[in-house]
Image (cartoon, rainbow, N blue to C red):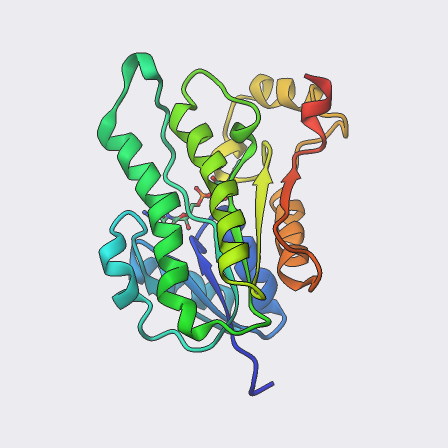
Length: 235
Ligand SMILES: NC(=O)c1ccc[n+]([C@@H]2O[C@H](COP(=O)([O-])OP(=O)(O)OC[C@H]3O[C@@H](n4cnc5c(N)ncnc54)[C@H](OP(=O)(O)O)[C@@H]3O)[C@@H](O)[C@H]2O)c1
């Protein structure tokens, strides 16, 4: 389909972002996936095959993002999945780490949209990644919880400002087969599973499926979608 634009996945070298990139690459779509390391992005793109390509892009250095996206053409779907994790409590507050995460998810996500705006069109769609820590804080989630609420606010303002472009957010729960969780001790994972009404942890495929739905359903807009097995019901 010569008129079709690309699917851009920021944070597409690992975890859920890589699964989203794989979904579209398997369907013959042009996929541009990013990593902080251009070489790693190109290697993952080659692994996924099809029409996937890789670029280097560091969301924590927002002034450089526009230049790093200069080679990207028309964009149908933009997925902002990247994360650098931050365990940070107020009692032991680490300002550089907090600043990095706030910059990455709030300024970096926004600047990526800004830089790509001339290449989006009225049927384009955007998905931003937040997470369960928005609604279920834990003792070191001060920055993560704050930022995840920020993702909701960002999604709302983008959906208004960029209309008719659709903007949605996805909030995964504990994604049991993601690199972050897969090597955690069994009892830790089991405690989360027991608290989940579905009796199973979400998978990367579950979250990728939700992202595809948010990207492709043309009437779904300004939605915060939790993909967590309904865990908040049993707290
Ligand atoms: N996994 C879960 O259980 C879970 C739960 C709640 C929310 N989430 C959210 O879901 C999203 C995906 O999580 P995940 O666990 O699948 O992630 P992941 O496996 O840790 O992968 C993170 C991705 O972000 C990229 N990245 C890291 N720092 C970056 C930076 N400064 N600039 C640009 N890209 C950067 C990484 O690429 P390089 O290392 O190649 O640079 C990688 O592709 C995240 O937004 C996370 O907050 C996940």
